[in-house]
Length: 325
Image (cartoon, rainbow, N blue to C red):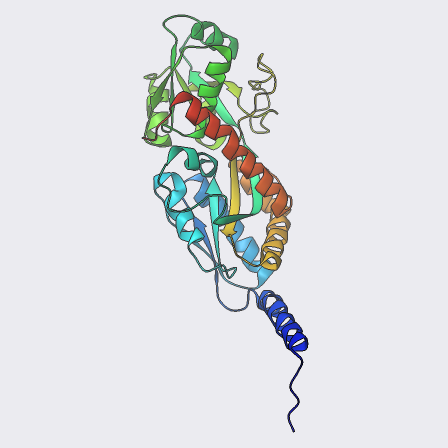
């Protein structure tokens, strides 16, 4: 005669089975299939470079193929949206840039909710942006730019595009200091640097990676960096904060994200593996050559950082009526 379990016992057994399922799934990861790192910008840029530096280290550690898939467009939101819509099974991750923190305010019709549909896995690192000038301009120091910015004529500066972090950082600085700094948007780093080294735009703001080759060739002169600490790549260049604007900090940054419902056990494991990769001297050195200072930490630390960036730049976009290109 078959015994029927009491209702409470059957419910408990079902709950135990459901609770065990994610654990078993997480324990099997990553044996099922290759892991995809979606670089949300085209090949050649810093996001692509970060993904390709991480991939072989993670592949060796995990014993599973790790492939880089470039999905560029719309300031990184196309690739990020593809990851947000992917199965939350631990096999698809996004490698994003600081535009991820700006896009929610700048692109009104994002096809995903940045906070709800994605989970931070790890903050890879931060890097300075450099305010530079052509070698032949009269601006020898950042103080010279501030003085010129207080005149009715003002000073023009170029960035990689409207709504880029460089544009927002200078906008924030100009508003706080009441400077007349006129934005000239370019469509990417290549066109910006071409005009900067030709002297067609008096000031430029771009990443260390973008700007440093032209500083080394003496065609451009660095005036200040936007991070709270000096860049290891440019130790003699003062920060904006040192130059009379205490507390100013506008870093470029890179991070890895997962679809929001990815099992926490997998997010934790991937975070640990990324941190282990970042501690490898050769990985850290390659990232440093891109102007990136490694930042290890938990997924929670990464999420707090990203949420803070979203809040800061949303206010700048709103207060200044900034629109995307």
